[in-house]
Image (cartoon, rainbow, N blue to C red; front, side, top):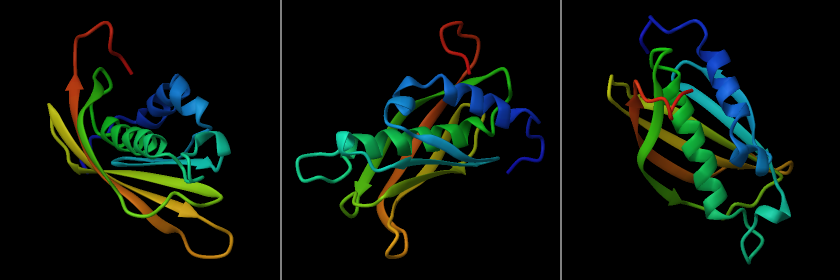
Length: 150
């Protein structure tokens, strides 16, 4: 990553994440914030499942999108913000676990467009973490808009 990272990117990401009502609603926690990499975790909650009792694809997608977008947010200048403009999710295995980990990593930084990749894992006490989903997302850096900040 670029060595010119703004020293307050961690604070800005934590403050922005705290304002995300959707992440609060699903019980998500920001557990790692590094330049170019962000991790979000959430516990299993029956209220977030689909008809077979697996974590719903929409919840998986939302958490992966947030992880990838915040990873992108970590590499932009402090006066800019970021919005997702496209993503593709591959659901690889049912969302069955006690906890879930969603990791977003910047694949291609840029001044206007940033690409990130994400991986979602189910965590169980009786075995190793299992890859359940992958995502590639495209984000647009936003500058000078009063209605989009942090």
